[in-house]
Length: 213
Image (cartoon, rainbow, N blue to C red):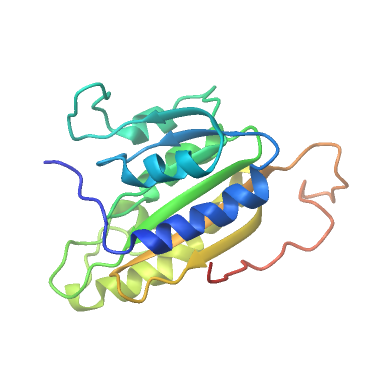
């Protein structure tokens, strides 16, 4: 089955990406891995506005000139030399997120589309259930969307398990869409930084920042 994509609010998605590209990729052009390319409309537009050094779009859905593959398998490989990872799947992005985290070795911007399925929608994914400690239990579908929201904070914080600091997280306003659009700027923690005995930086870990862009 082809992977669904969320195209209900392209302006919110574009504004979120413009914000991070302007702030973190203005001096050195971005190297973009577009994991759920779909029709390619978002990055076709962005590549007209921003200089991009390299772009690779992949998707499960076959298309002429495109590699048809589960992009989470690509993210699980070490040595990916991309500093912008776009995970714009309408369902759950957490399989991709968890595949990516062990392989981040440079400052990287990640975009996540989190589908918030309403009553009667699909069950919780394995990653979400593990994050909130449900194990093999499957809760009533009436509360699935609420549990997805609860799990998102825990799943985003998984980056700390890999000594990766979230420098900034921002969420675009998406009131008209049944999804959340989040951008995160990640940076590996270098050994030369001051550390306590636990191996964590001495300075206080900042709270997640949210802003409408």
